[in-house]
Length: 113
View 1 (spheres, rainbow, N blue to C red):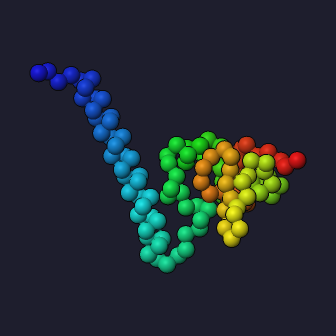
View 2: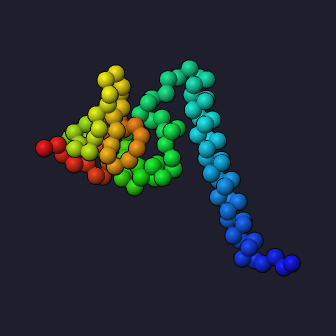
View 3: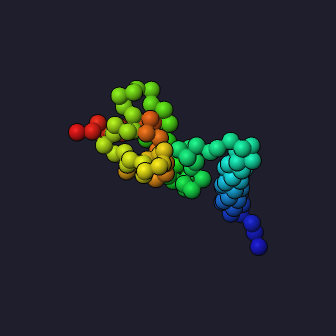
C-alpha cells in the first residue's frame, strides 16, 4: 500500500494541532496551579480557566482589555455590560462569555442611554 504525501501532510497537521492544543491547555492549568501554590489570590476577572478557545478568540477580536485607557469608556458605563452579582468583583458582557472587569474596555463600547 502506497503512502501518499497528501495523507502524510494531513496527518502531520492534525497531530501538530492536537499537540499544540494539549500544550496550551497544560500551560494554562500549570499557571493557575502555580498561582494557587504561591498563595497569591487569583483575580476572578482574569480567571479564564472555564472559557473555551472560541470565547477567548472573541475577546481578542473585540480587543478587550482589563483596564481602559479612557476613563469615559469603561465596561461599567457600557450598554453591553452585565453588572456583577452582589459580592462579586467581575461582571459579564453580552458579546462574549467569561468574567469582565468593570474598568475594562473593548472596541464595541456603547454608551448608556
